[in-house]
Length: 72
Image 1 (cartoon, rainbow, N blue to C red):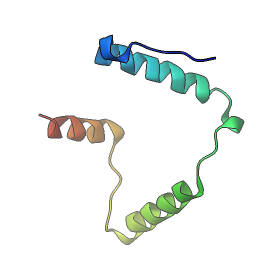
Image 2: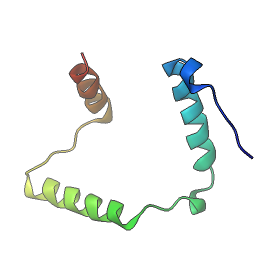
Image 3: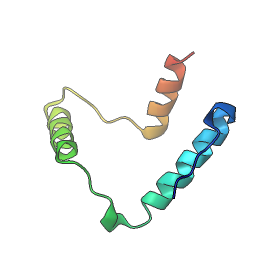
Image 4: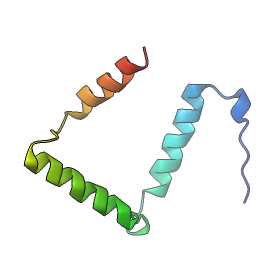
């Protein structure tokens, strides 16, 4: 099946809603979702950086705010 969306006519909000619906559908069955090997490598590197004190975890809401503020 081929679905074509009028992306050039859709608002950002509509595009995000469609994207969220697609992701919800794709991730419904966790056994079907596999991460590439490099994801594990990046996660390991970041965990080590936190352990060594060169990086810190940030609350997700604070991270989103920081990203939004950068766009202003």
